[in-house]
Length: 207
Image (cartoon, rainbow, N blue to C red; front, side):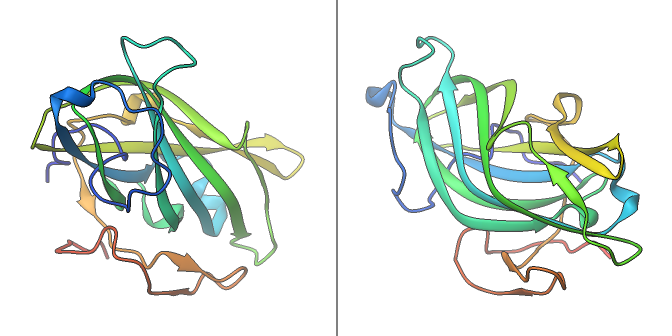
């Protein structure tokens, strides 16, 4: 199955909240379908690994470092990475962004809730609040592209783990098996409730 051609989890609608630094405003807007996936690493150690994403930002290729970031709020989307191995991916949001070519993607993570297969809570760290990925994506006006942001969990020793973006499995043109997940999860039991409209629609649910 094909992960729609792509650009990044930053696009289509997700309310105009968090909109900053528009670049290339005269070129119209396109939509980016943002997916999150998980590259197998230490994921088999976990019963569940819930990651809550609050924001996605992209940086135009022709802008200076401190200019023109395009930022979108994604309404506290929580995904369980244990369900997203291989080509499995969950839609975080459809976000509208100015038509342009982008070179950097940030995903802001507000919380991680992890339980090991033993039933114990796991200590999972982040390099920073925002995971940074260098990946080029081009968004055309009035078109929709899909982007997969692949996250890998690594064991660092002494029972600690760290989340890092995986550039090799991220970007456009990635195969996608769309897994629908409710977006708000409980702290320790992995249960989720519904809510929000971003990412709704037809899906193929992995077993």
